Length: 154
Image (tube, rainbow, N blue to C red):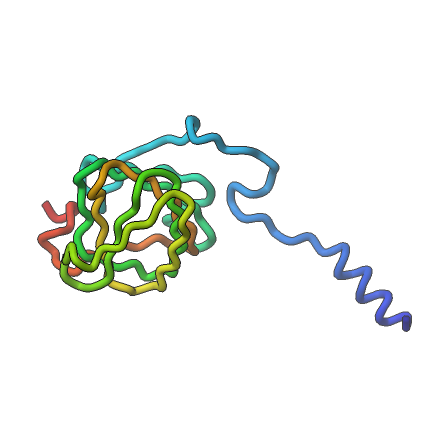
């Protein structure tokens, strides 16, 4: 190995990668320690908990959403790509710009759903409460396709 290649390899090993917010130290987050709060863009009974990161800022974040049985999120979209993991219950999601129960697909705990940014979709807690975990790159955005469906406007 040349002297230049050796120096480059040593420099690469010594570089310190900057840590993301909330990821600079080892820790474990237990479900019972999550702080569930209302979120203005959701109906009042739906709760959101920040697991890692700062969803309102640029950078990676992980949140959990708890939707009580019977609740619906009408057609909306997010600018960011999202990865949903179903933690509990059955997650019903449909694609399209109109709520259509016939387009809903049911996903059990453990299922992972990839949702590209700006994809119109809707949710329904059709068979009872569900919890999903969402991982994405912030800032988090949520735009309802019809202003009358947006809880922030009422």
